[in-house]
Image (cartoon, rainbow over all chains, first blue to last red):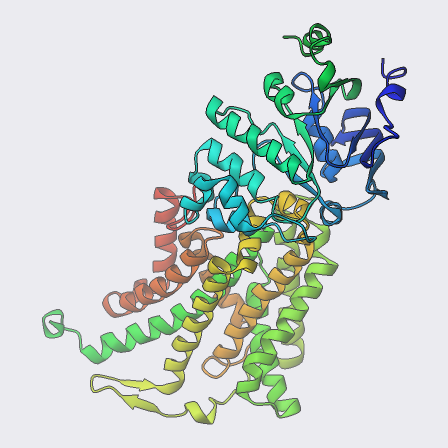
Length: 247
Length: 295
């Protein structure tokens, strides 16, 4: 399937492409998890990676960030090839990851967690703006990071990468295990961030949430991108998509 | 009260002071070990040798270059720290992908080489190092005589311990360090140069040992074996405090120095082993140490 699909998936000549992933292969130790991921993201766009558990969505984000043990292929960000760069150099180009397990540091309080990622460029949100997006964090800024509720930890994990000036945010399942009202809050936040000009790649299991925030959806299966569905064409393709996701 | 116990207050206070001074060394040394272990996950067996090096560098600065105690208090730790940076860059950094045991073996080997080197050139009889003139003499406190230099050791160690604690727990740099201790990959993914931080942390830990060595030079003879004798006790202190706990290392260091001093008053025969007895009990009752976090 991947042999025929990519041509229609990659390359959107009308838009200003920020991220281009081509033929990305990735390994965790000996285990080959990505088998040629192809997709691109335009500046200011929100795209999702959808797929079943173990399809390779989280691995794709890790590979973009340079966190897999080994990766080959091409990941170009704003015209720069990053495939041979260390994670810290990739971060300095303007990519920031909000990991699935959230990665809140227990030996740091909320404010220290928030202030941890260094500023890499101008144009990040101010701390005041972040506290405005997530008022809970302001109230609890002296608490130990891991004493927060799951939803608050998610807000902190998203909030801390908004300060740095990174233009591309990789959000790994930000709604996983959260109450509907918090999912809604995170959805509003993602839409607000899009308005502020952030480009976002979102890994999601929650199709309703994905549909409420994204411009396009890439479907990942067995370490490959097998389809792309624009959000506007979601209704026509919903049966096909349910087939992919096995719902 | 003293009469009831049949102990002269001079004896008690004298031993407590001695305990506090030993505790000062325990605290500074176990603090360095804790800082290194926290980020590098390596038990730095070279720590005793780095302490000895600090004393030797101070002695060399004085005898070869005529540089006295006070500049040496800054310079010797810098020299020892720089050798630590080299050691980390050239050797330790190549071992992180292997089992931690290899780091321990490497630092143990380095310790043996360093001791052998100094033993070969300076012998084991010990070299004298004068107490700095400004710290000669002492104060009569009424119940005991307090030598100025011994008071200075306690003050200097408290300053260094509190300064290190403050830097790690209350500053931005310390937040990087704590975060990298928990999840170095993620900290790197934020754009922070974690390998450089690890190198500097090892250098800083070694410099702390060097600082303790300079403090020790005027009261213990400068001797190639001085570190080997000290480090065994300091490892016990670290185990009791909890591996990697900063505040645990400091409090346990002073506390156990005092306990040792008290034991010397009430049961002198036990003073050499009391710390190890406590270590055994702590390992049985609370294996992660008094201040350690359960794994």
